[in-house]
Length: 294
Ligand code: RIB
Image 1 (cartoon, rainbow, N blue to C red):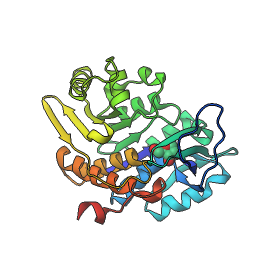
Image 2 (cartoon, rainbow, N blue to C red; image 1 turned 60 degrees about the horizontal axis):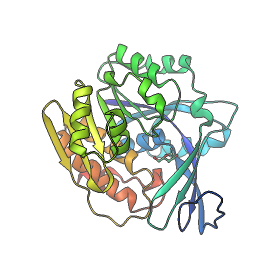
Image 3 (cartoon, rainbow, N blue to C red; image 1 turned 30 degrees about the vertical axis):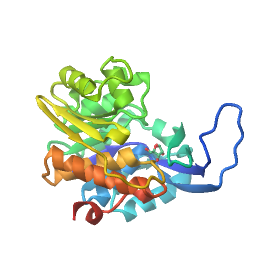
Image 4 (spheres, helix red, strand yellow; image 1 turned 90 degrees about the vertical axis):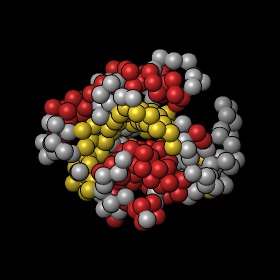
């Protein structure tokens, strides 16, 4: 299976802080690292490190050239990443003493992607290929419908969640990935509703779509038709949770591409994420296949 991630490519500025900044507060950080990130590029990296054939599509400015070098070094095919005369997407990330983060995004090139570029890229893909999406770029509805018209399978993680997600043709997706807050919002349920109930509602609402519900310390849930699976987390020392979700998705898809069942793919994805959270950074913290599949 070939994977095409159409997605964000960001320069991450990671500040290590005691706690996440509050309104009106000024805080010293004990460390600052400039690194490679973006949910889309992280997903591509996870797929590539997991051994899958992956193409990354998106847009960057001159300041993002180092991102391409890194993606290539991990085996991501970057021929569909366009350049433009503007800034690359940026993420200002605070990581606190518990490894939890808070992120501010600047869209940059991620928001300058055009329909023409999308069409030109999708023309090279079709039946048997999978499009991987998140919610950090523009024209996502067009991407979903156009990829489906070409016979591709489509997976989307709707993070970072915003109300525009309600306007997307999510019923066309083959795989929908949500966390508990996003899941409850899509299911039109109260926050704090039981995970199983959220999952049941989503399965009923999107009957042709496999659902992955990731719920932090409680692991992840899978639902499709009458099939339900729960995968608990694998304990790890948490240093930085950045890119844990992207790692999970990349490894889940790569495992499915290798012919694993959803249950086994969830286990591999969980193992990969546990390694990611135990190390600092986004792409750099994503493990290689031998650490996860052996
Ligand atoms: O999921 C983590 C990613 O979210 C970071 O790399 C940052 O760029 C934001 O897109």
